[in-house]
Structure formats: structure tokens, C-alpha cells
Image (cartoon, rainbow over all chains, first blue to last red; front, top):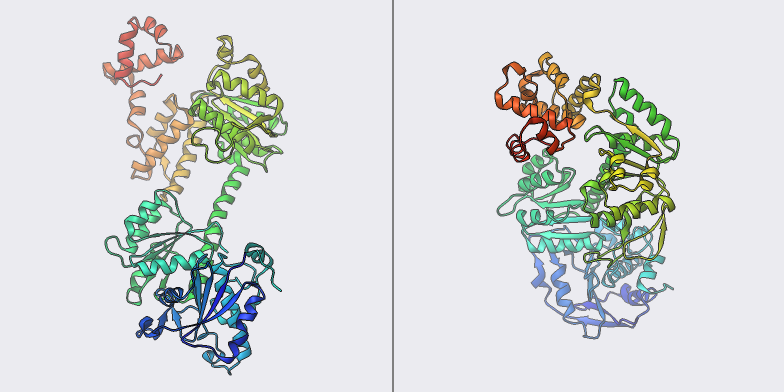
Length: 178
Length: 446
């Protein structure tokens, strides 16, 4: 199985610390990784009463930029994401579908009143992107707390898990993490 | 993560349904959604769910009403109410009505995650509790058998004698005497007690179904056999197989059963693989098997196989010393299940119970007491609380109407003649057609 993955910076969001992100993803998802820049008007998905952006609608917009070759797209943005019924989401994906989106907004240490830490931010972004891509490849949450597919509702949960799939999830995906 | 757990999301907003559906699918749930209360109740006709996530404000049926309806169908349902801040008071009302918890929109993902984890824990504990209670009552079977009469003491002795042995047992007695209760008592005193007792009522299942019920079937064995299914013989492996109304099985089934009893091996319908099952066999019947053997309706070899040890449970009319203790036992039982105070038997009611012949045996007595517990309002169970039929049958013969006398006399003769209409008609001095008409008119059970 070789599925091209498109790593999309939404509206040019390409911070320096994120340069290594696609390469880190390749360690567990050994597929052709393409970098993209996608541009669209995020204001269309802004909810002023919540001061947040509707992730499902952003994801739908993102999918328009995915070439029709059986690949999957993952978008990265710095804005705070939500789905209507929840207060926030770190990211969203289509289960067994074509794409996913993640936000770094709540992955930043500064959000929690702590000093800036780009190394930690990269770790978190890698895990969150791998988690959402795992869903896009059809994986559900994993009970192994060290597996990247373990459910995370706190940023501390993300820090606890590894940036790799557990054996069972690797088997289900048909991949081997380096 | 939550494999095998199901959730029903009820919300009138499509975006909310979609978001939550997606969230729970990622968590490994089987998810169903409904846009309103009616659609939710329709889905409940097909299956119950482990968790119900119900929006409080919906057009038509609101969440509180839906919660009540769900709990009428599935009394242990775990219902979580989803509400806006403005309706927290209503959510509190839902909690009073038995909802598991409530959550306010928009929901914090961590709150949701914890709540669902706790809800599943609660669900598992409830189910475990039910299973343990069932096990406990199985392990204490004698608590279920009430009998102070010498006749029942003899039955208890026989249960003790045969329980440890692995012999086949035949329990005999009229309908409603408690043959299955005795079978379960034997099982739970036997070394096989940690394995299941599997009961099959051979009289209530058509032959073709009985075959598949006992032997199981392979996928595609017949129209509608979409999956492989284990039969009761297989399920009883290590434990006890209880075949009730064994006298009712067809000649073909008698042959099949004889083979299984001899070899403890069989094949599923539509299969070739020989399956071995190690079970102890207990059979029961209200019929006269010897007579059936004599008339050629029951195989002699099967009869000898199942009748290694025989226990006869006397009808209630022959052990009247048990009537009042049994009645008191059922009063306690129904007082608990109906959450009513315990009641005593008024002297006249007690007298009536003792006089009655109880053709339906313990089952009839239980029904009479249950009815009395439902209709009675006083501290005592009075004559008026007992079924009308009971009172008519036991009324003072000097005060009976001609019709009641006739009905009573016909019943007595039919009982003496084992329900044989020709012989009964001869004794009564009427023809068979007239007797049939009277049986129909008086609704007499033969």
C-alpha cells in the first residue's frame, strides 16, 4: 500500500519549528509525503460568539485541494478549532476518509501560561498529526496509553503518549514504525 | 477503545448529531442517531443501546419525556441528558427521574470522555450485578423450594441422594408442581454446578425448531440460517441439560435424542463435524410415560435411558401442609417486587386456599397470591382478593347454583377419567357432543 500524503500549510502557516514535521510523520507512515500551501478565507468559518473556527468546514475546504489520486491530506493551522457540540478540538479527521486538519493553538505551552517551547510544540504536533492521519486510515482510539492513537482530551494526555503507533495499530495499518 | 458498546444520539440539530457521531465512531462505538423522540423509540424496537445521549430541547417529544419512555423499555438504561445552560433545572429533574448524568453544550471533550467512561463502568457494574444475583440464586436453590410436608421432605431427600451422582434423572409430576425448580436444585448441588444448566421446553417448540434448538445449525443449513449457531446440547457442555415435557417429542426426535444420550456426540444441522458434549441429563414430564411406551408413542429404549432415577413431585392437593407456607412465601416475594408491605392471610382466605384442589398446583397458587397482592388494599388478604373461580369452586355446595353444581360435577368426572370425554360422557349419562358443548360453555380445562 502506498498512499500519497499531502501536508498542507493553511494560508502559508509554515513556522520554522514545523519544518521537520512531515519527515517525522514518515517514520511511521512511510508513504510519499508532498508539501502543499493552500489558501482560503478562514473568516468564512469563524464563529465570533466563540472566537473559534469551525474545523469540519475547514476540513471540507481543505479536501478541495486534494488531488484525485487516492491520497490523503492533512492541513495545519494556528487558529483555535471547534466542532459545534464541543468546546474545542485539537484536530479533526474523516474516519477512514480522505483528510484531516490539526491546530497548534492549544498545543502551545504559552496557551497554558508556560514559557514558549518549540521543541515540545513539534512533539505535540507530530503526535496530533499522526493521530488524525491514523483515523483517516481507519484506526479508532487505542486503549494502549503509549500509542499515538490513544484518545487525548488534555494536552498532558498528548505528552504522555509516544509519537508512534503501537504494535496492534501498526499491524492494522500494515506499516512498521522506524 | 469501546468495542461492542453502542450509543444512541438523539438531537434535532444535524450538525450536533454528525459531530457526536464522528466523535464516538473514533472511540470505537457502534453509533446510531435519531432526530427526535419518535425516531429514537422506533430504533429501540429493534435494539437497546448501552448509552443514550439525549438532547433536552427537541420539537415534539422533549428529552425528559423521551428519557422516561426509554427507561420504561430498558429500565437499566444509561441516559445522559445534553442541555444548554438555560435549562440546567430541567436537567436536574432528569437526574431525579433516573438519568445517569447531564452535560451542558458546548461540551468539554474531557468532561465527555470522563462521563462516558463512568457511564460504561456503571453499565458494566449493573450487568455484573444482575449476573451475580442470578448465579447466587442458582447456588441457593433450596431457598426456592418451599415444602414442609412429609411428601416434599421425601423429595428433598431424593435430590440429596441423586445430586452427587451423574445419573440421568426423570422428574415426574403434574404441571405447575415445580419440576424445573427441582431440576435446578439437583444441578446446583451437583459437581457440575459451576457449568450452566440449559433448559429446553420440548412441548412448547415445533419439531423443526426443536431440532435446530437442540443440535444447533451451520450457516446456510436452512433458509434464514444466516449464522452458525450453537445448540443447547453444545451449550450444556460440562453442565446439565434439562429437557422439560420430554413426553411430547416426536418419534424422530426420540431416535435422534437416544443416539446423543448414548454417545454424547452429534452434528449441527447442515454440518459434518462431530461435536462432543459432556452433560448430565435431567428430563421431566407430566405424562404417563409407561402408558405412552405401551401404546407405542414413546420408545422403550429411550424411556429406560432417561429413567435411571425417578423423582415424583406430588400434586399440591396431596400435600396440603405446604399450601400456607407456599402462600406466605409468595406474599413475601410479591411484596418485595411490588414494593408493598407484607400482608397476612385472613382466616377465611386461608381456609379457602386449604380447601381448593389446585389443579394448576404451585403455579396456580402463585398466580392467585400475585393477583391478591395486586388488588388487595387491606393489611390482610381477604376472600374478595382471591380469584373468583377459586371461590366458586369451593363455595358451600348447599348454596351453589344448578349451573355451578353441573360444572363442578363435570370437572370431577373428567378428572377421574383423565380427561377422557367418551368415558366421562358415559358416566354422566349424556352423549359426547353434549359433553363437548358443556365443556365449552363452562370453559372447563381438561
